Image (tube, rainbow, N blue to C red; front, top):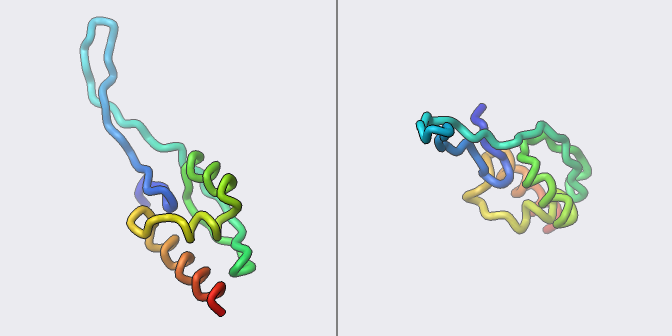
Length: 94
């Protein structure tokens, strides 16, 4: 599976290691990904996702997984997160 956050879309970035002599070599900046289990109140079940630490803080700030997903753009979410978002919308509608 790719090194990409399923909620925010944050992925690997590239840059340079710069030595004291200003020699430049390519390097990768990896996102701080965590395998977490988040509880959905609307679905009354837990969901396992690979989430960056920054997105995890945002989920807590917005008041939970349901609130985060309903406000998030579809282009940033993974296929699994989009499926959960659709289930949440259906559960709240009924």
